[in-house]
Image 1 (cartoon, rainbow, N blue to C red):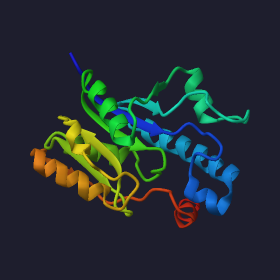
Image 2: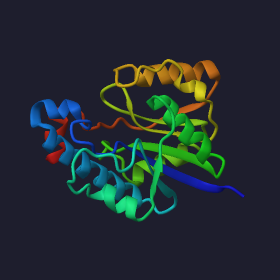
Image 3: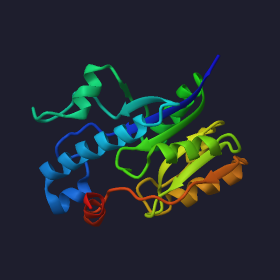
Image 4: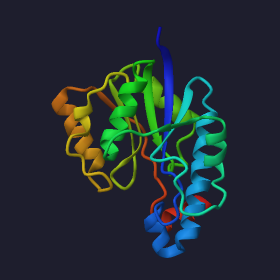
Length: 204
């Protein structure tokens, strides 16, 4: 019998110079890496408050850093064997792989990025409630992407030709869903931390 709900936190391993690169242009690589670690920890704490779902952390690589600095929450996750390695060439393939494998064990799955501090337990509850009525739920981001995506039924084609990192990610995903006749619900708009202005907004 499948369990009901699973939340997956997607995270990049904190390699210096490879995380929060847009922030690094203003703050430097060290500070950008520090912000990445702080955000990942806050998002995990937020998600953990939603006790009705299991939580998984999927990372793009494990123990592949160019320095010996403390990795904070990532080290804690690794010690507790909480990490799963993402599979696939691009973001769409990696999310599709995670969703497909998780839906074999759970009825509903939601993916949240590690730079979305506004996603909390109430937001997750809204997402899973939406999945009782729809095949897919999306949490729109102000920059044209999304901070959350979830499924009760899934087709990998929903990510076909989505231009990841651009301003049309949400609209392209919705267009694919309409073409595939995947019923969809949208949550309230959120924001993520990509640019310097987002960082200051978060710190306030």
